[in-house]
Image 1 (cartoon, rainbow, N blue to C red):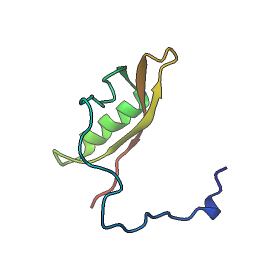
Image 2 (image 1 turned 135 degrees about the vertical axis):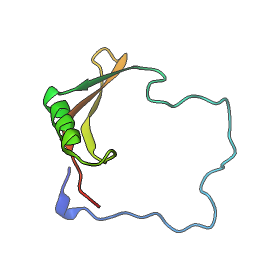
Image 3 (image 1 turned 45 degrees about the horizontal axis):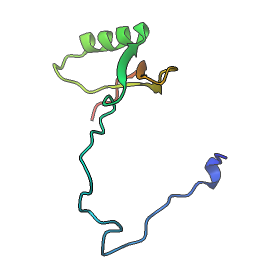
Length: 93
C-alpha cells in the first residue's frame, strides 16, 4: 500500500567490489522497446496545438519543453502505444 508519509529513501550498502560478474555470458540480444513489439504514437490535438503555439511565440530558435504521456501495451499484446496528452513548456534557466 502506498503511504507517502511513511516513505523513506533507500540506499545500498557500500561495497569495494561488484556484486555480480561483469563478464558477458551467452549471445547478445536486443533490448530496444520496439524489438519485439510494433510501436504506435498517438498525440492529443490539444497538446499538439499548445506546443505549436508555444514554439511560434518563443523568440529563440531552440527551446526546451516536455511532452508527457502514457506508454501502454495494446490489448492484443502485440504492440505498444505511446499516448502524449500533456505539454509542459518548462522554465527558463
